[in-house]
Length: 297
Image (cartoon, rainbow, N blue to C red; front, side, top):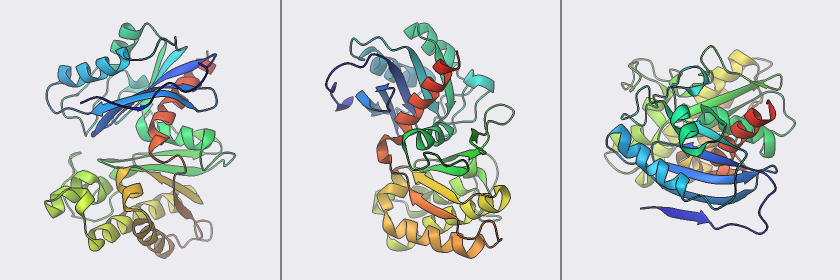
């Protein structure tokens, strides 16, 4: 079932990016202006089924866009993906394996199209209009159906060889822990994501008790400490339905674990906080990917 979060707001912007956020739980589409304002958004649950069923939901959402001609399209999608996002294989969408998302969207919309990992996109959003405006070194995380991350060092978003840098969801937090969909064991995603919590408890993550909430927070704090120790970071911003939905108890557990494990002189005092962009962060992140591509020519 389709839903629209925001109707068009006020005067149409002179320029807007068509922003698309693709996650394991929902697909969101919107128009976002130069200031990061969402002019219009709509979303639908991510279906289970074959690749073309997932594509059909995305296509329907895009074709519902109001009559405002965007200057380009920016996409945030779960990874891993090939260089430039030409082929995507999001672990939380099993139907898409080496799916040619960028080229199919560019063909459908006729727009110049750019794609990046959804958590890296969030890192761009946090540095654009979020918690880390003016901060040159930080980690942005999404703790939701899956877990991802994006890292900014010296003011530059880290890409890696194929654009997959920042996959904090696959930092090992529990040696010989639960099997992960990536093939390893004990990954943060296998221990603290929405999928992992449902598997551990046999219930919806929204029904998790205090012990499960605290454990999830501890696992996230442990992973953040590892990254802070490795990369000399003082700030981590966290978004996603699990982290934001669990709220203060989750973040209290994460901070306690982070303080106990980030003990080097340069990592002591590393902070972890909810993203001030809230649930809007991933879509604004997709827009940031688009604006970055558009401005680079």
